[in-house]
Structure formats: structure tokens, C-alpha cells
Length: 182
Ligand SMILES: [Fe+2]
Image 1 (tube, rainbow, N blue to C red):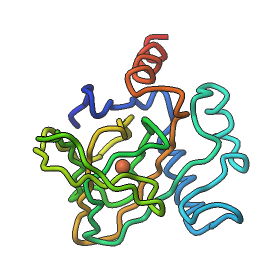
Image 2 (image 1 turned 90 degrees about the horizontal axis):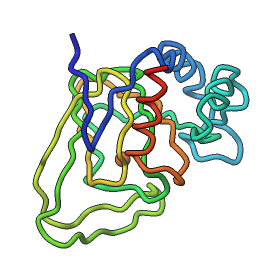
Image 3 (image 1 turned 30 degrees about the horizontal axis):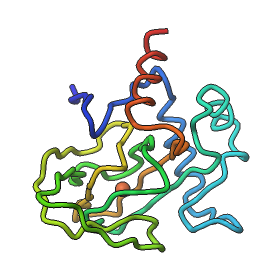
Image 4 (image 1 turned 45 degrees about the horizontal axis):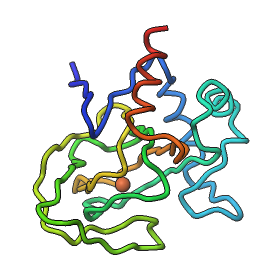
């Protein structure tokens, strides 16, 4: 059985809240559908009835979602995000050799904003505090320094659905836990 997580970095989201197979199918179907007026990885939820249904149930979900494919072995450097506090990430293909890790700064944090990537690259000395392989969907805290090392064999695809920046990671975690209990 896969390990479930509930800490300050990620929260494993159970299948009872979202039909993740359906989300994977939507991601694969829209993989190459670059949409006018959006960045290459962004997609509108409007054209997918199931995504609209989910946004009605969970109004904190963004009107746009992301499908990101990274080439084999691709490394996303240590960064944190400022346009969102958290997101629901769904594995779509080739997760098995990839690692997402979180870091704690060892000195006051120094970072450089990379506009094209919409993230702040961390330049400070850090130590690794948590690492996981995304074998199942998670709520991820995007405000803490993290990186991604992709597996060497194939492209890696994820669906990442941002949560309104009005909400913090811990708040959404509680909302999801309440929804599980209902
Ligand atoms: Fe990130």
C-alpha cells in the first residue's frame, strides 16, 4: 500500500473527493491543446464539465489548470511560488523515478524572481527536510522551498490545479479533511 502523507508540505488527497482517473484522462486529452491567450501549460476548465462540477463543489479551485510535461531527467531548481499558496497535483505519467523535496533555509532567505517561471529561485544555503515520489494526488504547499528531480527515462507529466491565493495550505487541508468526514 502506498504511503499517505499529512504534514506541513503535502497532504495525500483521497479518491473519495476527486475522481483522479477522470482528471488523468482530461489531462491526457488536453495535453497538446495549447489555448489562445494562455501560457503553453495553462488550460481553461470551462470546456470540461467534470472540472466545472468540481469547481462548484470546491470554489477555491482556480478557473485555469496546468498540464506540465517535463523532459526526461529535468530538474526544477529550488524555488517557492508567490502567485499561489497551494495546489492539487495529480500524477499523469512516469512518476516512479521522480522526487519532490522540501528544504529549510539555513540563513535568511535570498531569492531571485524568475518572471517566465512565475517562481522565486532560492539562492540561500538549505537543508533537505522532506522528500517524496508523487505516486498519488496531493495537496502541495507551494510557499516553502522545494525542487523536483525528474526520472531519467521518460517525460514526466502532471496536472496541477492551483487554489485561490486567498487560501493558505493549512486552511485547504482542513476543508478537505472536513469533506472526507461528510
Ligand atoms: Fe513548485
